[in-house]
Length: 544
Image 1 (cartoon, rainbow, N blue to C red):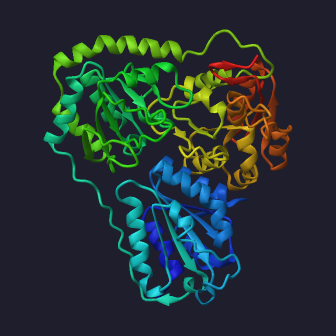
Image 2: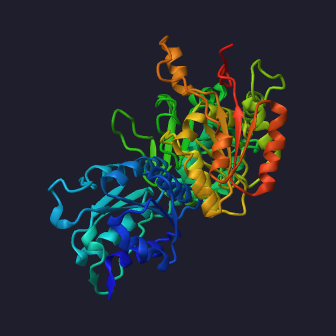
Image 3: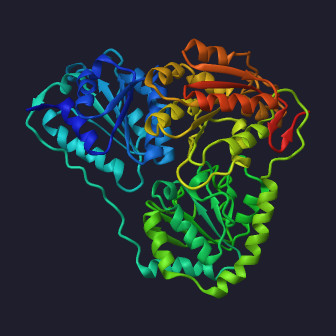
């Protein structure tokens, strides 16, 4: 005999879950108790949003789902930002919510809400387990949905009185529906489209990273002499030092990225959702561009968006390997090569850190990126939060091969620190750096204690301009007063020390590199508080 709680825990382990993050609650104790016995490591966090961000980061980094657990409506509300982020990032994740007892449902019981209809709407799939005899089917269906097609978060609502009920020993059936491998004919159509174009391009997204398809993409790009762009917050989809790489779209990108993509007469979009930021407010692909979408769930015509000329439901790696087999013509690659050299030169010039320092007080964010570039290991992991500070790494940091970046395409603030904690736990032998603004870090800085207690060792670099800088920029652009965007000072280094971590504050360029090297040598959670002049708005804009 087994309980519903133990069935859920064993099913999570069978689906690849190794980590669970939670603020514990009395409504799901039977599941919480079963997790360690199933071989799942449990980390208590200080807030459910931090727990959800950590679970998402593990899934994004490793490709294996992690779990986040919370209680009823209040815990669910806090973790909902992480569920939304996992959906935006196409990350496999399991959200488990304790629900009120079945006999109390509908009576406005303590912390009651319809968890499936409300917070479940943010997930890819959601259900409530009301009948213990149906638990195996529901759990199997949900975990299968998480792993099939476009990955995403799933949500289980479990009434408190169901969790400890005994049942037989059923095994949830977890099946993964994968697309049929692309045929030679399907690959040839898209290869010929690129090969025969004057100015072809490839836009690669998270599906390339998740599928481990970077090497295959390099091979196709070299074979056809076609440039590759990374979608916003997917910079590791292609090695940035490769001569075929022309940049990442979205915030922080130089003008050359958008201009070159709009000028493309043929475009392959692979493993990319073409969201608002990645597509420059849906300007890409341009109306005159022939394009193909290769994705686990390629775009259809909807919400005013047009369908691609060629849509292929396929895993990115499977398609790219087949496309390399098909190959292109030497005539096509020769005609593309000269243009590619010129485009690459323009991109490199636009993303080289200026030698001259801009006027202002504090640490130049461009110099922070320069130090990170020459100091970190090639396999270091960078996480990022939301905010204008993120435009400097987007513009200047060059990523190599492998998965070394975690960021929320949802635009969620507060992500950087929890994601770095989770990355350090999941990959303890790699350097992990969180890049945060003062606004975002203040939202989840309570998790510094979690970092210390859990044995993780992230380094947090907080760019402090004492304002919600992105929103202040929008206010100024609209000629509005900066209402509610000016903030007071926080001594983040002192807060780090109060939580048991290391903390140091730097106020000039020369002090940053020694602080970073000391933090790397310490192998402990460390906050480097970087004072930044609020006049430094973006790499292109200065309010001096």
